[in-house]
Structures are given as C-alpha cells and as structure tokens.
Image 1 (cartoon, rainbow, N blue to C red):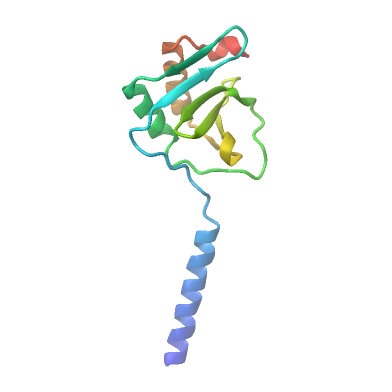
Image 2 (cartoon, rainbow, N blue to C red):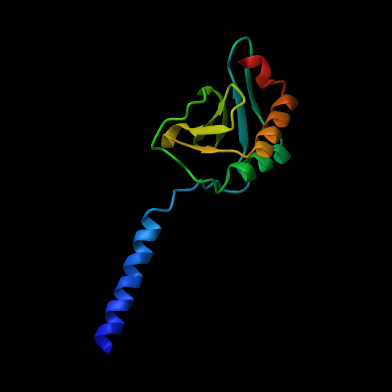
Length: 134
C-alpha cells in the first residue's frame, strides 16, 4: 500500500512541476515606481516624468501580464516611443496596436482594448497622439 501511495505522490509532484514549468512568465513591476514617457518620433521630442496618478495607472495596467517571446510582435514597437519604468523600457506600438514590447527582456505582452484606450488617453494628456504618429 505504501508503494502505491509513493507512486501516486510522485506522479502528482511531477505533474505539478511540469505544469509550473510551462506557465508563462509574467511582468512584475514594483508599486511606487516613477514612469517616464519617451516619444522621439517625427517632430515630437517628449521625455517627461508622468504624474503619480498616471504612473500608478500605467504600472497597474502593465503589472502581472503574461509575457511572450516565441515570435516577435508584428506591431511596430520601438524605444523611441516608450514608457521607462525603473530599468525596463516598455516600447509602445506606434500604430495604436495593443502590443507592448519589453526591450530588456525581448518579450512582449498584450493590452485589452480598454487598457489600450486608457494608455491613449494618458498619452494625449502629454501631447502625444498615436493617430498622428503612424
């Protein structure tokens, strides 16, 4: 009987380990981080620290997102249009697509349509209109 319990326990542990290994990596941003908006595209030259309220909103939206890195995103993301949070650069898709590319991790994640609209609203408050950039 002990032998069967050992085998069942071993199978359960092995299954749990395999399951954990295949879970996607997630974004992890500490609360209270300052967010800097960088937009050096076309005739725009924006490099400004966001307000505490906007930094909190961006951090909440970007935090705990599943990361992907198997295929590069099709949307045109680049460092010249990004949010800098700590040492990480979150490149924003210039064309309004909901993809965010993390330069230092060579990974990306997706925003919901609602989150993308919130990002657009925040960008507009700093004089950046994505519709004009692409």
